[in-house]
Image 1: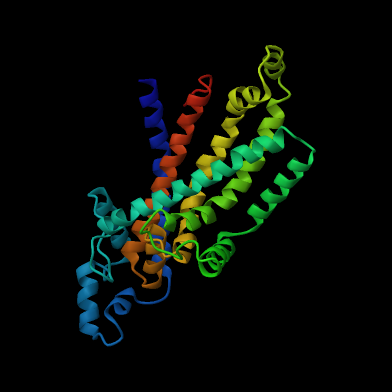
Image 2: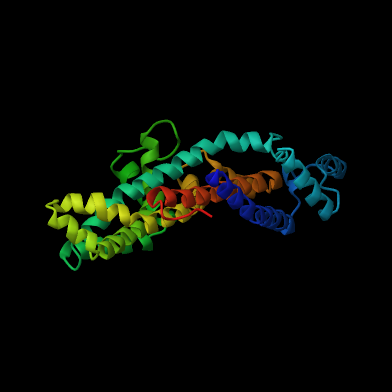
Length: 308
């Protein structure tokens, strides 16, 4: 019962965030110069055809009325209709949504697989050569953006070595390059977080007690130190999941990955108002849900923390 009440409170707190996101996206997309209807119909469209489509879509109404109508549609579960393809926006987004979530989680897994062992090794060997090497790797990862790393990996592993496919989503091999591209920067951040947590926890009394009981160093670090030092790492994971979703826009474009990110770019280029609004709203909602789940993960890691 307490968990449900805490969840209800969290959801109540995110409602203003959702309102702000929807409002900002609605206003920004409408103040961009250009006529999306004429763009959708083509240059040869007559004024009558343009006016008829605007009337059909409600784009001839005042901006305030369009805003109210958009909210009414959202409450009914109606995200609108694409100006370009005529498809239902929600159905189109949901057809692309699994691909984006798959890529985001794959990037998260890559980051964890790199950061945990590297961060633990660096933290337990503070000041040594391996610690310095890990710091250099982390700095390179943080300093190299996805739009640089992605093309470099395509050139090396797909073009020169011909080991992996360039783009698409036909097999597991197609997931390797985009997931590494997305996970590299996060791995660098997590490595530094894990290293700091391990160094801090190794100075605690319970570590000396565990060693006095005869536990080997592997058991001390992975069974006790790492578990107690995971809370700040989980915080970063929750916050960075949203960054992964945002980064998916670039990564999906580079690797022709059929997710929401690529759909957003295509919709922006086509000035497809409903599709852009729907994509950004879905990304924002996913980010909010990820942060709420992060709060509850704290409780699983440390029952002393109350989710309120």
